[in-house]
Length: 496
Image (tube, rainbow, N blue to C red; front, side, top):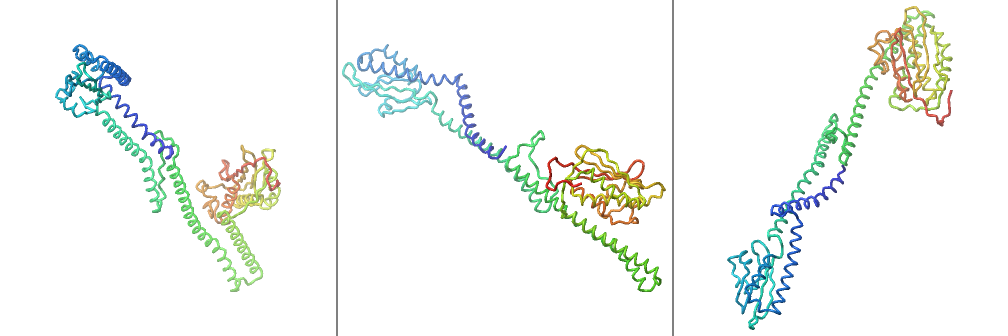
């Protein structure tokens, strides 16, 4: 629930809840007073006012037309009874002196000084915690004396403390409602803000390990996010990205150190060899044309290895920094791999390796790829297989099997050899830069250790994946999965 909705609901509840509580409180008081129905009070008030008016009209008629009836005890008693039934009473005054006081009024206030009340002309009396109002009707007795009838009637059916009590109860309910709503609403806002502040302070101090707390319901499901939860999610996303950035920077720094270490090692070896052969020529050790020619060939080979290492290092650095641009085109991998196999078959045969090509499906396998980058990938992998397979001393025919097939929405290319295979301990690391296996695939077989790392970087740039495994009958298997392209034509057209 959003904060805006919470505030709106709290404002509405602050207005409605006290009314509901006050109504319940009044009903409890009414029931405690013996009234089982609220309508009894309203009906009593309406009937009481109507009956008082009827009796008042009857009395006015008697005072104007039949004043002598006031001397009749039976009539006065009947009139007083009728008035008492409607919570009213009458004072009969003759020549300024109180002659008769209603028994009802005397019962409500037995010690009242009615003569003094009449003399003071009090319009409002409080009798037995009820408010009474007065009506004065002057008239003339039958004997000519001046008379006055003062009628006191109950103006409200509830005691005088009812209104201040209800007012106090209303204020109390308003205060309690405000306090409770303020507590619960503010707690749902302030507590997440405090937690967010603590997390931000930890981020400020460089601690990015703790996840920011997110509000969850008691069932473990994510609640609908309010503004604070959205802010916390934004900060959590910032924390994750900042941590990834710092971790990536640390990893880059570690890679840079390793890179410098490997570069120093891999460049120092051929440079030392070149210096040694040059010194041999300068010192006259190569004193024949045959030795000088052999020395020069070795120097040229070492310089070529250094040049290749620098090229691969430059390409690996660009791939690692995502600075290599890809020229994606729609490529039919069946035709592409068939053409590649025909091109490489002759070169592999010169190295004593037989290349076998298998096409498992005849349907076109269209992928979005950069043909030049893919060519570099497959050349690196074929060279890697051939290079390490040459150390196989088992005497059997050296073979490389290149196959292509389809697996769901992807093209699967496998390159298998019958060489010594890969040590299981080395499998997780062979695609890392400068990594060389220590046993069957070691540094003595040459190479910079960047070939498979470049392969992985380029395949990732194509949205695919590459992995290696050992075959059960010996040898290594490298697999490449490339996602098939959509049916729509791309701008680059189709490359074969």
